[in-house]
Length: 137
Image (cartoon, rainbow, N blue to C red):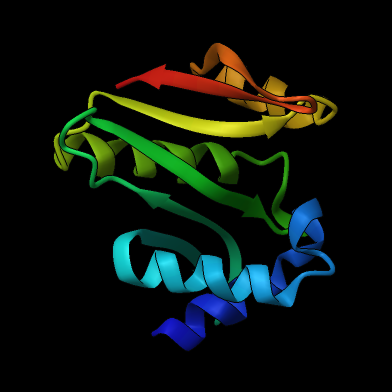
């Protein structure tokens, strides 16, 4: 299964700036997801058309964290991302989480708009070029 996580991340590398040229980083993320996280994949005709890698295991803060989320270009703007996000929220809530958080690049206005439409709001600045967004479950 770890190999499948790696394959999905590699398939979607173009969607993630920091992973494009860093296979080692992608492998480390896949290893962490395999050991501690969850990967939700949407499959259509034996093809992964979208996925989300996330953690719903912090019972102290009760906050899930989305690490990666992407939808294949051919399936964007038809509600697939929203369905994936809704399922991740549902799984997180069942795991005892109260909130869900993610980090997004300040320049990624499409992603920020998508997250805001799905109930996320600005939490705090994370770095020079990214911010944390959070949603109540």
